[in-house]
Every structure is written in C-alpha cells, then in structure tokens.
Length: 137
Image (cartoon, rainbow, N blue to C red; front, top):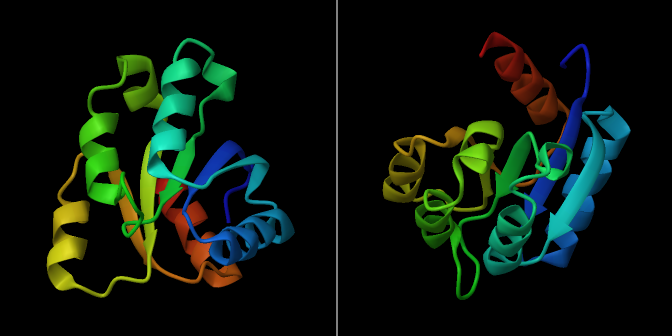
C-alpha cells in the first residue's frame, strides 16, 4: 500500500452495488482521502471538464468500468483524450471490469492513460498491489 494515500479517487460505474463495494474497500484500506462516485461515463466526463482548472478537484486515479450504457469505457477514453491537458496529465485510469474478454483487456491496456486493468470486485489485496505499482511509477 502507498505510504501516503491518494488525495482523490473517482469510481466510474453504473452498478450501484459495485460502487458501494469499491468505495468501502478504498475507505477501509485508507487508499484515498476522498472518493467521488460517478454512475456514468458521461457524468464523469462532465465532472472532469467542469473541474479542469481546479487541480484539487481532479482525481489522482479513476477506476473505470468498461460496460456501461451510452458512454462505455472505450468511449470514455476517446472523450478523455479531448479533455484539457491539466486533466490528462493529473488523472490516471485503472480499468475495473468484470470483462474477461482478451480483446477488451488488450485494447484498454494499450491506451496511454490506462495505468492498470483489474477484474472486479475490488478488494484489499488488489488495492495494495495498485498502491505498490503507483509508487513504482
């Protein structure tokens, strides 16, 4: 686990149960000081765009689901690339998905902004590994 927790983490998932579990794991492990939950890719993009000039409101890490209606994880990444540089430089993305589709995983991992690919559900061991990987980068 990271020596110092991340300041802000964003969960982007349309599944309320998954958001509840992920948020609870992050709280219990003290992985982040603050957690923002967005129930759609569209809402998350709007939040990031509206806060692009307020660094303390931008998440250090975004946990992004792939399979969501309207703006899925792939569309999110295309739109993310169009956001101001301040957002793209600060926010790193960890895909948190139930997908085991190798093509989905490869497509996500090959994206510049994707830091890691994690299979749901989020748990303390995974959070520890993400913290260690975060410190290495």
